[in-house]
Amino acid sequence: MLVVEKNNLSYEIERMVKEYGSDRQSLLQILQAIQKKYKHISDFAQQEIARLMNIHPVEVYSVISFYSFLSTEPKGRNIVRLCKTIACDMAGKDAVETAVKRELGISFGETTNDQRISLEYTNCLGMCDEGPAMLINEKVYTHLDPEMAVNILNEIK
Amino acid sequence: METTLKTSKKRTGPVLFSNYQQADGIKKAIELGRENILLELKNSGLKGRGGAGFSTATKWMLSAAANAEKKFIVCNADEGEPGTFKDRVLLLEYPELVFDGMVIAGFTIGAKKGIVYLRGEYEYMLPSLEGFLNKMKEENLLGKNILEKEGFDFDINIRLGSGAYVCGEETALIESLEGYRGEPRNRPPFPVNTGYLGYPTVVNNVETLASIPHIIYKGGEWFKKNGTDKSKGSKLFSVSGDCGKPGVYELQWGTKISELLEIVEAKNCKAVQVGGASGVCLPKSQFNRSLAYEDAATGGSIIIFDESRNMLKILKNFMEFFVEESCGQCTPCRVGNTKLLEGVDNIGKGEYTFSYINNLKELGKTMQAASKCGLGQSSPNSFISILDNFKEEIFYSNRKGIKNVKE
Image (cartoon, rainbow over all chains, first blue to last red; front, side, top):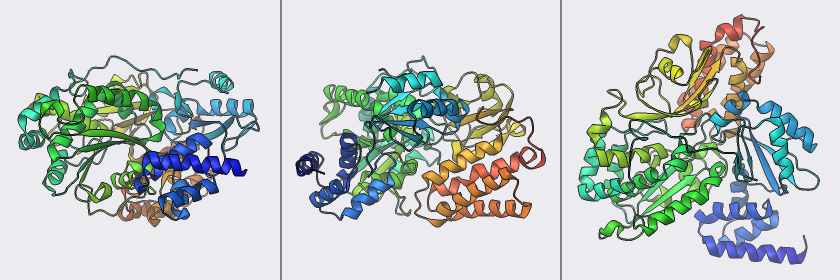
């Protein structure tokens, strides 16, 4: 990581800590904000957060590792989460899954080479009556069929 | 690129989906005063709608009686149970009910602050919910001296979860709000005494809070007209799976499963999962049971399986879910769920003896008794009920002619 990038990141984290507060109860919000902006929470970012909030870096890491929406490894610009829970499964998740994997040439848990899309599974999205469903970042798409899912993915930048 | 989510169906129902004008409940609450609100609530017999079924009036009374400088109202919108989506409908289509309920709760127990813990998967609701809260502030339904009532201050914040099913457990939810890993705490002490930041906290399900304005405005007697002796009022059922009309239905407590199946146009139904992955799976012979706290209890999730489904595959899906979502803090749940999943795989391969199966069921019972929170206590339910109720299919037949769950 370049020094300039590090400085920018430090500055950004400082700003977030100011915005949300340096109390422990702000930690999750700060982590969510960093995850959203940088698509992961790097070792350096963890240390900076720990320093500014006056806690041990391992405390920060332990929280990140608990929540499935937070990650320490870089993710693509868009995170696609396909619901694999029972109702979506029965509504035809498998066909969507295969089509998406073929189209992007990656499997679930991987990121495309151009960093455009990370594919992930997720548990119940609360769209059981409208499955199969997927989340792209925070937006939800329902009643998917394989062709439609692929078209939606091809549209995102 | 627009989302494909469709809403705004016209809904009707006896309680939650009946007519309500925003702020009516709050006005009535101010008129009644704190004691009368609690009496009205007690009279209504409202129980927690998240699934556990604890009396809401008792919860409120305990925290109203607690002496503390701060108190909190938390709305549990971490709806993660497979097959449940009623909170999504309430928050998107009836936010006035949920927020009015929170304001009334704050007034009653003397809390100045409410927090909505919204699951990370529902982040797309954030703009509309925050817009709604701003509108309430403009109308003096939130903020200082609500509706000109001196000293009635209340504010609502929305906090997001980050994809953890266990955070729906109230103490895990509080841990998460405090910025820790969402691992459940020992109970007691209960959140009504020692909750968020150590202050008395009422954690209520979205649906429970949404019932409050109706009860306060229309009275406990009115609410009690629906339901059974032990389960008062109505319930939102989230129906999914093999049926003609999946969706959210408001029905009276005590509705028979067979009646519900008729309403949602389910054909060739083989099994019904009542209460989501942590609930029980009932075969045809038990479709005459009624949905109520005292019989087939549910937080609202109804998943319907028709004749073509493979019950073992369904069970595998459930157990994979629990293995992933167990927080790993206590051994019965962390190891137990893994062992049960292993058992399902072995059954699928035909590598089992009946004493092995019995051992697994015993393990399930141990988990029910020894796990720290509701997740581990309820995760063996589907394992035990599916193996008991569908043993002909799983153990005795050669499973030919039964299609894959994934078809």
